Image (cartoon, rainbow, N blue to C red; front, side, top):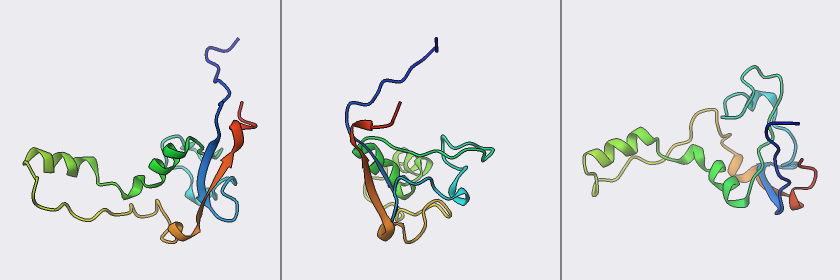
Length: 112
């Protein structure tokens, strides 16, 4: 008996990734720096989730750094504009807006 068992998803799951096959594993050169990636690079992770979760994770590199937002809030910055959002170098290919597509896994089919 396992200590924890995941439930089978009851709704569609999604993935946003590069065309032509968003459900393919990413190339190894893009692996290893994400939260759930294998730091040793032995296996790759295929991130899937709800439609909203996929979108939020896809735009994550465009968010302002939390320390910058905290400093702005600490000084009461309500008028001065914050610097423009940026893409963390190496985290999102420059052509990803044009080449990314969403794929659906209906009802979480094949997900244990």
